[in-house]
Image (cartoon, rainbow, N blue to C red; front, top):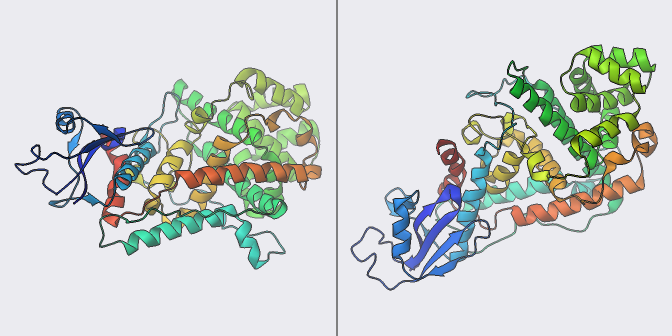
Length: 448
């Protein structure tokens, strides 16, 4: 005998399972004196129920009867494998969650245009040594996704894995090298998200205009809390293609206005300042930007103080709400698994990537891993740190570029994020058919 699902509601994370023969539709379904267990979100700890009739009674609601592959019931080698399957179905459904009010409208049913700006492939810092690949967290994540894909393909003829395994292996890393690589990876992810907010089309509806600006402001707070403006500056210094994209996002009108009022500054520093200003102020007329710059000579003390008072940065910290409003490039999640009415967000990506790794677009795996790391760092960063309120940093960005304390902060943040991702990744590689069922829960969520 094996374990079989009697009934389940995959999007809700509920299931009843029994160790039995594959006889769900047989005459002896209720006659057998079998132990039946109930599995539910969010803990997915199986609990024995007094009667199997409870499971079948659930089909009067939204529960489906059994789990089938073709005409055959799907079997599982253990109750823990059933729990893992239900957990990942539930988590994968989060890829299509449409969030709450204030999420920008999505790009529509068609794929986004292929000519959208895209950062060039990762180029490691100069002086690279082969062993440095081991200090790159994104390479580690890419390796975990590749290992998982291989195990899924190896089980092509099996219904489920026999033994749980860990796909994300972590080792202690040296602070300096790990911090440097991590900082640039997070800067790339941050810039990618800034570009995406900037590319959302103008909306006539006032609520949608507010939603777009709110997405930018939450991203601004997120980047500031994580202390990533310095790494973004370093990225623009080192990568001319990224610098060009950043200038395009700011726009020459705003760059010229800033330089006219403040005076000529280093181009990279100007662009970093203005990227923050655009996220903070939203899509306003140039006269609004002129007023802000003129009143403060673009003092970051003024800028940060207004933001802190208005948006409670470092006071009301709701990380989950933030990632539910920060939009991502739609191509990072396949079209059939995205939200139907709104733009996909960082929350959708985390849910989908951690539960349906085999469906991640192969040609966007690096971008997915960088963005996933960014989201995990924000969710797991120290609640006590608020780099946003460190007013000296923006003035002295060039001097802070090699700060040991900055690298140590990022090292700690990434280490915590990778440990969290390890617990969030799959613990069982199922057959390709079952992996598709897990991913399809996102599609079911769109229909409910």
